[in-house]
Structure formats: C-alpha cells, structure tokens
Image 1 (cartoon, rainbow, N blue to C red):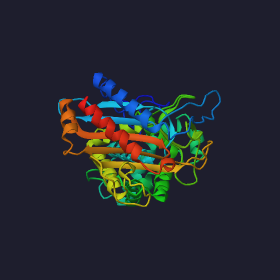
Image 2 (tube, one colour; image 1 turned 90 degrees about the horizontal axis):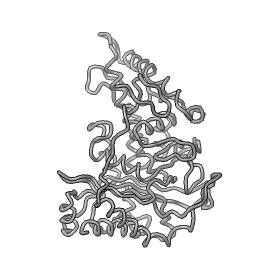
Image 3 (cartoon, rainbow, N blue to C red; image 1 turned 90 degrees about the vertical axis):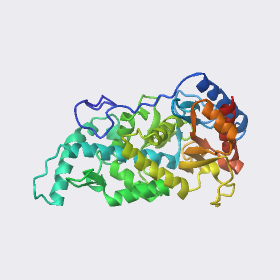
Length: 402
C-alpha cells in the first residue's frame, strides 16, 4: 500500500512515516457525554480563579479568549468494553515545554521502523564489512526518504534551522542478518533515554538536531498527530530543540507564535496508543512505554508532587502514575513573559482499595487504568498541584459511580 498524501508528500516512496494516521476512536456514547459534563464542571469550579481573565493571542484577526487549563482524560476499557474519552479545551494550542519530548521519541521510533523496512530491500554481498554494509543502508535510506522530505510545505523554513533530512548515520546502526537489522546507534539511544527519563535538555538537543525539524513534523502529521491549516494548526508541533535553534511557526493561546506546541487531545492519544501497543508496532510501543515508566519513577510526576518544589516524596493519592512525562518552562512571547507554565501526561492505575470507584468502573466495562493530560497550569500562583489532583480524583470518582 502506498502512503497517502500528507502535507504534500508524494505517493510511492517508502517514506519514514506511518502508512496512515494511527486510529484512535473512543466511543461517543451517553457515558462519554456524562464524563465530559463532569470534567467540565469540576474544572470550571476549581481552576478558574487561578488563571488570568484572558490569554493573549497576538495573531492578527483573533480575539483573546478565556481558557481554563486544557484537560483530557481517557478511561481504558476492560475486556468487552470501549475506551471513554472527554476533553475540555483539548484542542487549544499551548507552549508545553518538555512534555513534547515524548513526540520526539515517537518520531525516532517511526524512523527506526521505516529503516528496517528499507533494510529488508538491501542486498548485502557476502563478506561485506560492517562499514560498507552501513553505507549500503545509508544510500538506500537517502533514496527512499530524502526527495519526499524535501517536498513538504514549510520545509524551507524549517530547513534553515536544522537539516532537511535526518542524520541517519548518527541515529541508526545496520546489522545485516540480525533481527531487527537496524537499531539505534548507542549514543543516540542513550541521549533519547536521558531526554525522556530525566528530561535532559542537552540530550534533547542532540536527538532533535539529528532528526531535524522537517522530519519530526512530517512524521507527526503523517501519524495523525498534527494538521496544518493556515490560521488553524492543531496537534503536536516541534520546531525548537531545547537549545538555541527555533522556528516560531504555530500560533498558541499562551505564548504567541510557538516552537514547542501541543494540544492535550493529541498528546493523550499518543500515550494511549503506546499503552495499548498500537503505536508503530508492539515492539516499538513497548520500548516507548518502558521509557515513560522510567520517567514516572525517575522524576516525581507533578500529579503527585508535594508543595515543596524540591521534595522527592510523593503525596498520598488513590492512584499510581505508572507512565508519565512532565513539562515545565517559562513563557517568553506574550504578556505573561517569564511566568512558568506546567503540563503533564500520565497513565494512572487506580487503587484497588478504593472499591467504590473500582466497582463503578467495572460496571461500565472499564479497567483500573486512566490516562490524563493537562497543560498551561500556573502552579506558582497557587504553590501547589492540589487543584489538579482534585480535578482528577473528583472526575474519576464521580464518573465511576454515576
């Protein structure tokens, strides 16, 4: 099957993207509508006093609008059930700092999977040494990918900041005859681990600069995580490397034209596909999940973080974050210059000791696993994440017994 045309890329080539957008279709039943109403009410009553009255949108023709903390929640189905999703302002585009590193990891694994598809077409003569075999793969990758990458809209603007094609030799290692034939180069793999597990910015710079803005955003678009439309971009967009390179391209509600921009709906979708092992393939999903599990233990997730910013002791809650990635960084392009915004996506396992909630979820054919994603929270105004915890606990408990 030829890849469809996404963002102007031509059919026919073995491009380093998904063959089609990854499906994500939680149900839209009465339960989903009930969940949306519950979430909206709890968010409005608990968070509206924290936020500015309006968020500036310094884009001609758009008015400033009041937006609460964008929030998405997904209840994972038990056998025989269906996932149930709800979001409030879940399509609002915001600067969200390090949370977007998850999307960089996805793009890297998408490239690895495509490289293995290409490697299957490469004939390596008997007796070829490792260096020459690697050159054969690099030539095949260039033939399959480079022309398609150059054809994308915005490529010229993005290519001015980072190379228009990935630095394949810095990312991938060819091992003919093994399964899989292509693996990540050890240094790249180590940097990607640091990027996710410890949210290390210098390691992120190396990963993003090797992949390039053009490839990363094309991969996100083809996977169904970003849609480009003039004045109405939405999804996940990365054109900043957590260092000095940036292209401010996509309008946000909190930071003017942004470089690390997302909505909660698409980041939650990425987490859900990883958890359900349907993002790229099961092996890739498992590897990405392992990184996010380590991030949940290597860094105390905001959702269970103590009021003391230096504390490493989580607060007591009726759930355990078993996959998580936080975001934190200062705004720099709007009237709230320098003010920090916080964000996070987490997969939670609800405590079996909360029998009312567990039994209520089971009655709706739902498991004990829930994914949440929120962004644009001004924690430093309240000196606590307890309002976010309250939204999660109240929404889950009220919905479960409704």
